[in-house]
Image 1 (cartoon, helix red, strand yellow):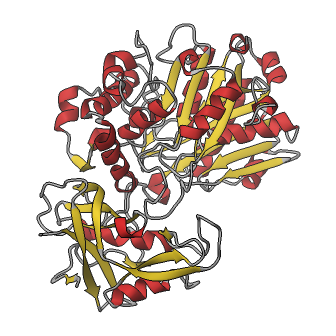
Image 2: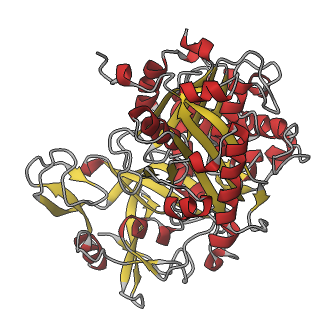
Image 3: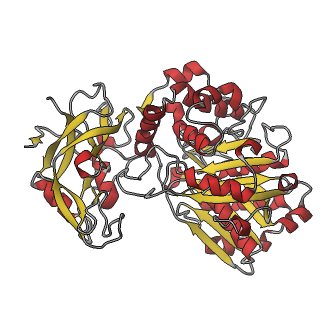
Length: 152
Length: 398
């Protein structure tokens, strides 16, 4: 069971995500609204793939499907952003971005924020789990996928 | 026949006959429109080469330069435009590729006098160092912008974090790259940071942009124009006693180097691992032959990656070899970024660093390294398609 964020990690006013107009990544964004983490998997060679594409990068099959994966990962790299480059972040202070890899899905990588103290120590290899952050007032409504260090 | 095709290659076939740049400005301070900056740079390069601008018959640029060949041909009064080329790929990865494309066109006989150019007026068209202001974004950026990954520093910091973690690269090694650039800029009146030296204490106490990058790990944001005239080696030899031969020029991207959301197969890389092999084979030189290096600094960590991947040091000895003393033009073993580069001369999207590499071969750099025969300049480390060129004297051909 994935956690749900109580408040947005970054302030309102940043650019929001929207599905591509050709429909390629719509299943991902629909999945986040349902609090499921979906990625691509090739129906022919079973390779998980991220970012999304119409074609499997491993075997060039066009038979690429979407699957729901376990919403856990480990920290692969990170940065702590101090200098704001957007007006909405001007008085916000540092925030953490993590690049995580999903061991259950061929170590594909995803980007999100690491919840908790923005000055916390960050250790590459730490286990993390998904926290969904709903933005029901978005146009269209959307859900972000953050991470937090696994407590157990 | 070689696997890479180097036997069909550019080695010594073409040359840089002239270089030109405008005054370099802090972003927003150019009094000229961007198009005028480009025209001025091209005219300066023609004057430097000693050719009539109307002899130009081809144009190459990169990174979606706004100043198109057709408009330039109109402005310069060209009778005939035979070749035009836009290098794909983001950032400054095209700054050496644009020389490759120009040289390839000349070598193939598609054109005789090709200009490689870049114009930037970030004050007029928007800063690279600021995030997007659109209300919604689709595609790859939908997976990064909402998490506060917007600027180039934010897009590339995590590769450097990973480099430091995997290979034990020290902060002092990145600092040496910054100190060398600022040191060289103090002798270069073109440099935006001329008269503004940097010391280790100032670097160490500078503010974080995004960890692991401090302020002085990051390139500048500038306005200006730069241009290089590429022609045949024969013509260049008629024009100058010290022609700058193009020994090799190569684009480089590894397996899935452009995979979305930071998913290249090899992550902590400058993208040069494969291209550097072809480059040296084409040039007929080895890393030991390289006399001076211009290594594109979007960020200092990328320079460390680039130098390693070009075989100029190793992961194991980078911390010992890449010191300020070793990187200086005055006596260093790997003279680095001798104009001040993107950190301290000007962020002309890397083309200024190609010009500096050519100047080192001619012998008229502001920080001239003695007896240069082989001069290497790379571009756009970490982007999906990076590039490198090697320039040299006739002696370098052996």
